[in-house]
Length: 132
Image (cartoon, rainbow, N blue to C red; front, side, top):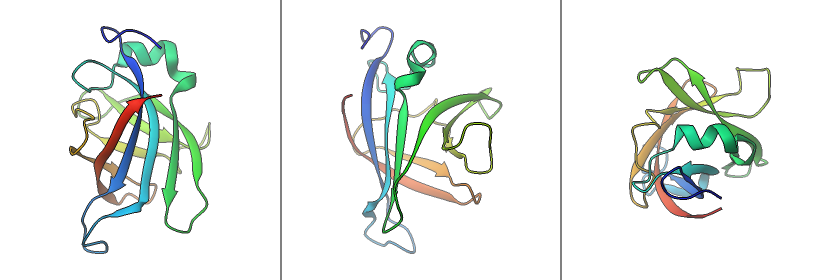
């Protein structure tokens, strides 16, 4: 773990927010991932570089088997880089991209969006954030 000035590894849990298919949201659909956050709750890209092997993700989706992967930063996107959940190294057709993850604070109650492997956008609420 590093200090807050350079990013502290945190375990972030996202639950599916309200949607047409899930009017009350769903705690059975979401993600749990580890990322270095700065004091304001933003992903710390510099700290990620030295801790990337610890930045894992688990996707849980109803009755589907959980999927495990890693959090990666890729060139491109609105801010010049995108945060991606990568489930299979070397393949990009299974990746899920966080929408403006670099701009969002990961604090309980905040909302973030992810584009799934089929290109569909889903909104999630940050359910919890705690030490990894």
